[in-house]
Image (cartoon, rainbow, N blue to C red; front, top):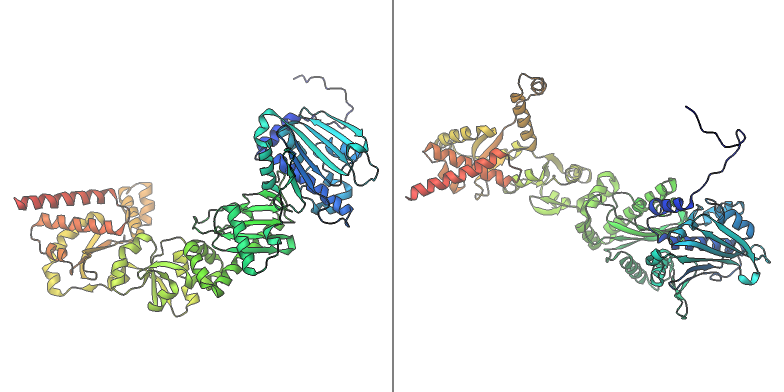
Amino acid sequence: MTLPDAPSNPAGADRTFQVDLRGLVDLLSHHLYSSPRVYLRELLQNAVDALTARHALEPAAPAGAFGIRLYADGSAVRVEDDGVGLTEADVHSFLATIGRSSKRAEQVTEQRGDFIGQFGIGLLSCFLVADEIHVVSRSARTPDAPAVEWRGRGDGSYTIRTLRSSARPRPGTTVTLTPRADAGEWTRPTQVRALARHFGSLLRHPVTFDDGSGGPGAAVNPEPAPWARTYPTPGARSRALAAYGEDVFGFTPLDTIELDLPAVGLKGIACVLPQAVPAGRRHGHRVHVKGMLLSEQADEILPEWAFFVRCVVDAESLRPTASRESLYEDDTLAAVRDALAERLRAWIARAAASDPDLLARFLHVHHLAVKSLAVHDDEILRMLLPWLPFETTDGHTTLDEFARTHRTVLVTSSVEEFRQVAAIASAAGLGVVNGGYTYDRELVHRLPEIRPRTSVADLDPATLTAHLDPVDRETELAAAAYLARAREALAVFDCDVALRTFQPASAPALLVDSREARHERTRSQLAREQEGGLWGDILGALRQEAPRAQLILNQLNPLVRTAVAIDEPELARTSAEALYGQAALLSRRPLRAAESSLINRSFLDLLAHALRKDH
């Protein structure tokens, strides 16, 4: 293979990357930034950082002495600041070199935490809406510094020239964009103002907007953040924070939790959602860094179990990613997440201790969220488990109330099992809790940790049948023939048949059959079908005595008393199948194909028998 001649270059000499600026801008627009609208955020951020450096240079300057002014009239967008400005050397270093940032210069390296951005590509975002960027700047570091002009174009070319001081009478920087025709969506005056309020409503420096109509500039951020204001009473403060949460999120919070982490300079609020949400569904939170909006979808700021709140926070020490649209996952963010989680736990504890009405409203809406937290948090478990609502044979009630009337609490493993036995268990005086919902069974089993005198056990079919009264011997003998025919008819379902008395008398039959028993019978059936093969040997080695289902007929029910007296074999068989089908339907479990067929057949046979009898 012959290689092409290499260009003349000494061995080992450094070479320079050739950057296709248009390709880089396309990369930014499609992969780094979520939308072209971020150009205004980047310009605001650069202005804020310049003002921060100016205040460091002139710490005696009064608050509000330096600010940011926005201008947009449809033909141009301009952002002007009273910041530290740039010298000609700064322009060569920071604007003419892609990837380098003035915030990484030696003179500000030690103050790096005071700035929002840490990446030198922000100005390039302006090429998302314009083909040329015009910058005029004058440095505040040198009293007699001239103004410097830099023009950068989308093809990668730029020019730099020195201007008279009169071109920029005061220190600071002005960035002017001439929008492309296809960028009108993001550069119209109304849109520029909306974007400025969206990104900069909590900025600590004054920001004004001028639409070129000749009127006075309108304040973009006329008031500080609501948590930074003073109020005449605690109630007024609570109402103001709730109103702010409603304005931001569009719902009236069930309650508002104030957040304050001085170690990282974080302040804000958590708004408790007024409606229940699916477990594990994580809402985006609104995160500002040093006043600048970073993200509206920062779900990483809170743990997964805290899906019952939405937050607005402003922090000093959180680190943004390169796109400045999300948070960098580091030890600081992990510590903030843990600290905010502790604030939410503390709010729940305060509500439990001092505001039972609020706690009741919260648990009514968000009991699933609290249950998910209680599973892993012993403190919340001890505090709130007695208050949490559960579905029981006494209706929907708290475990604390339920345990007062039931020293032994039985818990089912599935919703269908609970619905199958609830009415009979309640009539028999048994206390049963539906453990089929997420977290419920595990939490009920931990009830003795809170109430040591209460015992908890899984509901066993034998426990239920033991509480059903047997019939007298004469009644059993009289029904023996019918019971034999019923067992023969239902043998295909591995179902035994028994006659008992139980309340309510309106229930003709009870089908006692657990999910585990059905699975074991299915496995045993599969083993029989595969007998002799490899799978048959494997399943046969695991074979156990398959537990049978049990259809318990209620002698107190008039329909059952009539059925057990039937002498005609086919009618007796059909009635037993119908009773089994009705009990299976009442159990609300999925029916097998054979059971569905049996229900249809028994109904038609009974209908045919009734029609023959009438004629």
